[in-house]
Amino acid sequence: MRKELSDKGQSVTMERVSLARGGFSKLQAWPLKKDPKGVAPDFPLTTARVAITIAATVGTWYAQTVGHSNVMASAAITLVCSMCFDRRLGQAAFCGSFAGMSSSMLVGDAKWALALGALSSAFFELFIHSKNMFLGVGGRLGATAFVATLIIALVQNISTGVAAFTLAKLKTSFFSDAVMSMIVWHAIGSAATIILREASDESSAADPVRASAVVGLLGALVLKDKAAALGVYGGSFVGMSLPSRLMYGILPGKLKPGAELPTPSNMKLILAFAGAGCLGGLVHGLAAEAGVLAGAWGGKAGLFAFIGCLIYRGLGKARAAILKRDIASELSVE
Image (cartoon, rainbow, N blue to C red; front, side, top):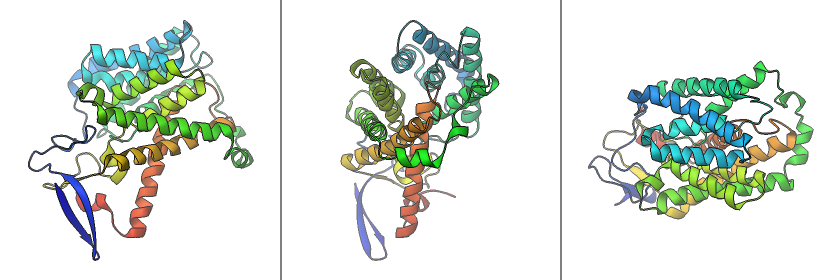
């Protein structure tokens, strides 16, 4: 369906999906039947969710101790959990596996792994029970795992490297090969994830958790450079975003009754996700070059993806303010 939107004499044509009449978008990653509600749909699974978060943390950590890369361990364990158990447990498994990506410097034995898993589960529950905070923003699961990892590090007096950070380091790192490489790999990971979600006829592949895990697993298998594989995996977290929130800032559950979500072209969708991925990669690369969070910190790649998505939305809001036209304000309830 095409509808003419007019603003100050200018007409903008957008393909839209009718939610009020129960219509559906041609885009797999778009809300199909209705706007997602702003609350977690899996409250009845609390016990299983807590257990799988902790198990994924310990399992990912253990897989590293027997020789597997942290990216491969996280992606594989998440994929298995999301396919073998209730699909609604996929996000919990993902969050736990991110925490389990920590190095032996941070998690030296099974006791620390269990403590990290318990903390990750606690913060995950806090997020989803707080109106499902940041629902639809890529990287929020990794950011959640990072908070738990940071607490474990602080308890052990492990430095984050932030104290040694200087603007001089930042200036000299901006155009380094390492930073440029991380930007590219993040963009590839993000674009690949949203393409997989859109191109597949299978609803399972369109699921953001499984799509991200598949992209991460492929990256770990194909790329010999662990930093490149981590970059692709980090970009895939951006690719998990809800398109309507990343591109237009429309919060889940806040669409006006009878309003219609704007549906972008496939090319615009891919470019938007690749752009957000670039921003996440920039943050990741600069942090690495500056020596901040050096080594394997659980949830680090997700944190940078999350920051990249927030920057992308910030730029989107700035653009809307300049053009004096904010789609989110027009279509969302206060």
